Image (cartoon, one colour):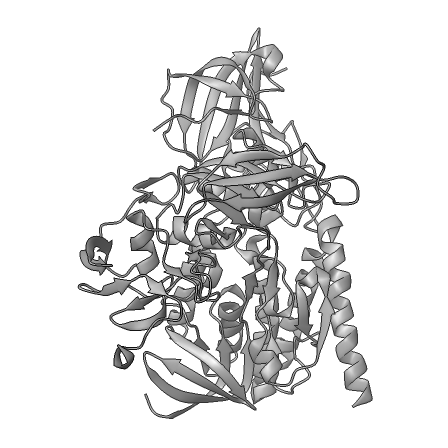
Length: 105
Length: 139
Length: 368
């Protein structure tokens, strides 16, 4: 959920809308925000599943330390979505396990 | 006693903080050195201006004005939606428990606010030491 | 950018300690570069929307994000070079290895200040990895910096200052905070921070813990329980809450990778958050010319980080040949302000822990 109005920070500043594709579905994002912010705003909370047990993972540290939020972005696996800004037309996929590099596909 | 609001400082611990002292234009609040000393209020110098209420990072200063059977309690408020003067809201105590309906008599900001509102409720005088906030309003 | 850059003072980390160190060093005339991996300087100040404690010297009464803006503006005005999106991945003597926007290069400095901060601790219990369980700092980053609520119904674990402050800020962001769970018998944070959320109707359950988190694919329910005097859950005291967010505010650990790599000697201090580099009164580590400031030197507050930064910046400038009698005086003043910040019932424990680190440095220095 976007925080449109805030008692201290005021109204959400205007930002250009860019579109990203998440597992084939187009969602809007605010230019410059991290991928994870756009996903959470769209109600997407599961970013990847683990290698051995296939357990779901999502945002955990939010500052690029823990790597729980990594996804496959434009074909490149293990991208930290909490610190990687969105770009118009970016293709994001829920990552299964360790992910695959493009040449392995 | 004069009919003016005075500050009530609820700062129970020795923490390193003195913006209340800096904010007071009348020299009514003294922290001194070391900075962990608890603030002392000189009631005679306090005009009830509210600058310390908005400046206190702990939101731990209130204004209380007692007159006849009623009291006006002012507290810092940083939530949306804001109440309007004339609204009747639910006054709460220090534990957030409801104490009854109370009309809003002032909603203002001061020089030290930077987003912090000062809300004043009219309450029965018997609740002057109890009321310290209001129930948040639904958006 | 060339493959090998040179400067007088390199500061790693652009939070309160790093920017303060940079400003102090710059004021001596030294050339200063700040290296920060984030897209904007300010570190964790950027997500702090509450007014800060301290005194005027620590920007007290100002909201954290405004302090970040002011420090960054001062750095720009005074000619400190701010390199954002720049990751310092390694330290080799007085040379930093840096990756910035896909390019790798080195930065060699006469003196280096590490102001790398700290990271949040996790807490393991069944279900702690479910999406929806996250660090309190993560929640704070997303609500205040990115303006997105990661959940609507929240439980907080930890009644230290971080847990209390983030609970309040979640309320400000429009979330419902059901309560704060604290294993200790009393609230660890400041009473005034606790009072803010108590007035807002948020209960704080001391001597309680999280038993488990459950949900199909993501967090749906959290079970808590009361603890007996031995810290064991009391059977029958379990309570379940339907929530979509569980925040963990269970302490911070200094981010010391570069200090380890540089060969600094460490000492463990539970009170300061873990292993911290031994340092002198001037914040110099056991590696000559390498200084530390802020949470990397022991987890404390932003006000102490600012003062430690000032001290380390001045000392680093002196090491780099920019010393003066006036500088020595300023260092003494900063040390005195640090002492004041570390007084009182909350600060005195940290003062002893800090002094233990300095004593360790003196022992090392004497044995050398």
